[in-house]
Image (cartoon, rainbow, N blue to C red):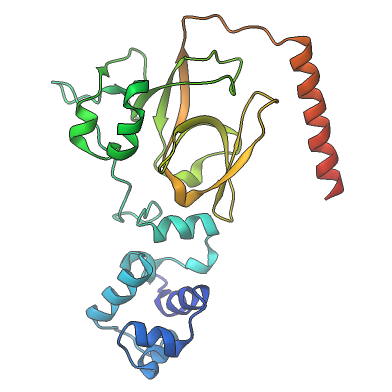
Length: 264
């Protein structure tokens, strides 16, 4: 028989929001005694209406509330669940990714030109907008996966030349991203960037450049719309070799990082 975590999950999510039983019961138009019985596991078959109330309030699917021990998940996964992106539960609400296909029903590779950057942030999940982008069929791409092309800007990811076209693969389950994975990150109300991505359990993303002169920075996972993993790049320019000065800067930066790590 499958484990049922509903009672413990309700108490965990309530206390995570720093709500008393009385305050939470009031928000759900429920008596405190009824909520206490549910959290104590004394209600074997909660009413469908109550299940929907909990799911709507916490923005977590009913499947997750019942089948997953939410207290065992990291902060990033909890934020994802609360954002409606149930990538951990089969049949849950996954991110909606708009795509286009050719006459043979094969996925196209859409290209996001620089002039379409602002439009992409607003229409990234709009099928009509995605259909308006230039589309290509690239050879030798793996059949499994969804790919898109974004232009790079700046020199933060040298030796990848500026103004290269970056071919990337869509990442649905962010938890599968390994630390320091090169990715295109699409952020709410901002530009998209090409960075080395490390996801933290506290619900943040560390974004680092290959260029040691560019400082890393952290953003909240809630501010991320999409993450695309680097696959390849094309450029009209030949990557320049690393200069002696750049090598020196990189060595100094690595040494500083080691000192910081030892001091902790």
